[in-house]
Image (tube, rainbow over all chains, first blue to last red):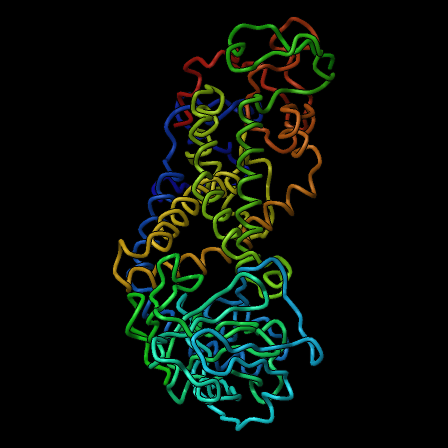
Amino acid sequence: MDNHTADPPAAAPGGDAGPGSRPGREPEQDNEEGRGSPVGRRVVLGMLGLGAVGVGVGGALQGRLDSVLAAVSAKDPTGVTGLLPGGGGFRFYSVSDSIPHRSESDYRLTVGGLVDKPASYRLSDLRALPQTRLVRDVQCVTGWRVPKTAFSGVRLSTLLDAAGVKDPGTAVHFTCFDGVYTESLTLAQARRTDMLVALTMNDKPVTSAHGGPVRLYAAPMYFYKSAKWLSGITVTKKVERGYWENYGYDVDGWVGKSNGRHDAPTS
Amino acid sequence: MTSTDGSESPTAAMTPRRRDRPAPAGTVRRFTRAETWVHRSLAWLMGVCAFTAAALYLPPLAEIVGRRRLVVTVHEWSGILLPVPLVLGLVSRAYRADTSRLGRFFPHDWTWLRIAVRRRRRDSRYAGKFNAGQKLYAAFAVGAILIMIGTGLIMWFPRLSPLVWRTGATFVHDWLALLIAAVIGGHVWLAASDPEARRGLRTGRVSHWWARREHPLWRIEAPAPRTSTRARSAPRSEAPSAPDAPPASGGPDDAGIR
């Protein structure tokens, strides 16, 4: 900021009253010949420096911001804070072109593949089965985390046991009625008690935007494992990669132990 | 102020002439076609980049648009292509001249900035071809594009960098995106309130009165002369014209301006 001369408005703008300065010439001249000071370059370099520092310390900063924003957004009736980075709340991610809808009447969940008794469940059938409620943090692989979110529904193991997994089956493949998304778990993972076929979220029916009426809820894993709009459960011989896993995401998506991330475990 | 879009030689190389179409009377050339092309390409790329960003980021919009993978791809490529028009423009001499104008501050720019900060107004008396705000905006745009590309690449190729970098890059990318949205909003707002400035970027030409009012310290390269006398070509303005102003030949007339 060297050239910061403090010429009063009355003085010739841009003129430093050198020997060549002439009264009244200023409105006619392009006073931008010569060197000036390279402010543009300094701004760009300064920004790049700040950007590099931001990349270095941003992780820690965002962590601190997250807790502040979470506290603010909890009391923010406008929801504006939800739009800030890390402002808490869910982000809507869908790989399909629109939100698919299924209702009480046309929703079906099929269980098939390497099972003794293939089955098809209506919503009322699923509600009639024993329900499990879990309250855990939701962690997205892109970084956002929503604290203490309640999901309830039928344990995956309940449906698998009812169908009777045949011997060569070692994995479970999930398909969705958006027609695009798929997911997979090993049989051992699928049998965990914190793997749900979720019917409610925060004690209300799962909305269409959140993957309703039925979505998978894989509590200990990154949220891409919790497939929205679940419509099919197929027992397979080996793990078939899901949608994002074909693009490099880990099949074993444990929170904090996969995808190169170290988030606190959620379950 | 009739104009023949001067056939003077000094600026002929910088100003692609459209001889078939006489320049509107009372106008001066502010941008060449290369420059308006750069601006338009950059604006389109930035628009696509910003819209796809919004579709990835704002839940209500994401719900309407969906197709996340496609949107991500479009966002990545529109972003990475942002510097292309800026670099291609460098083949144009007029563009190079304007980039160096934009990059440098002169004493009157500091005055402009001080008035803008302290008195919250844009005092166009202290504006050359670009005022200090426009200069800062240009520098901000270049810096922001570079940072967004750098941090974007870190996220695009996550395996190439450690997690702390990726979290940090996400942090910078997200917050700078908000700042960029605000700054572009200001840019569009100011453009919306000045049809003549928009005309400058649309047609390359602006009214003479506008140039004198908004950018009085800009020596217009090809003034539209009423007569053949150079000295008389100076437009009327509130400030009396300088009878002893040296000819606008880009000569060493800036001895006292450094």
